[in-house]
Length: 365
Image (cartoon, rainbow, N blue to C red; front, side):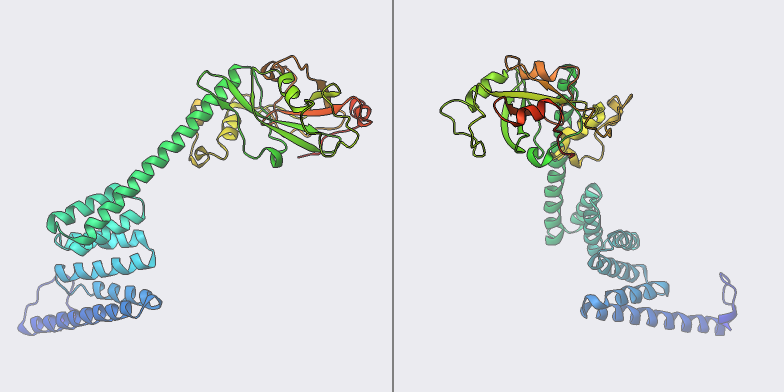
């Protein structure tokens, strides 16, 4: 009996040959039946796609069909795996179909579509081009080529935007470092958002600056405070006689002559250069970078910025209004909390003594 023959051995008798032919016919019939059942399951909708894959697999495992027919089944299984979102399996099946039949156009399309879904654009385009050599007018392949070209362009544009944003952040970090400025952990983010300094074409920094009124925890925001501007210039405009009084200043104590500015010291430590760059790319396309090139950023001696300030460690230093923003930020005891924050108090307010005596401290952010 042919059923008990050893694998690889040749049939010796006519009966053995007949048995093998019968077995082959049965397996071929089973393979074709599984193929048709698989096709029916596909037509029945997505609830039956897994059943279709199972049937196609059983058909292939019969090893009873020609290479051309088996290629069609591999291609059908690739189609269902595409529908299921199993793109890697779909790609493998489509490649298997092409290996068995290099003229299977649908296999090239499905291989290209699976590769495209896996963001393997070069491979996807290669499958499309090979398929179009066999069928230049194939509508599906030509349409997919356009989609691949568009996605490639979008990817390159995105990569360029990310690269540019990271480069700008590094340039900005260098400009900050070269000025001898130290950035610390950002505070009052609810007020500042993701605003960052800007370096203009003349290599001048423009900072967003928060002016905080600790007496009532209200704030003003200067969108563009040029680093070479004096504080008095901005205060003259903000507290001029023609300016509206602060809505909460019922006693009109916050006048140009009465206001003083202070900055805070002892509230934390500076960030490393790598941390500064990460801070500067936040909210930009650069934040999507898989790496910001830490290999070319000196990360040695990273300070601990998780130091929690205490009331006794916080001190207030008065700002000389005739100084520029840059000269104040360069003070050795000043760590910029993300962007500059200055505290505005009035000499004519009852709060002034409380503030000066160190009996007020900013809320922990």
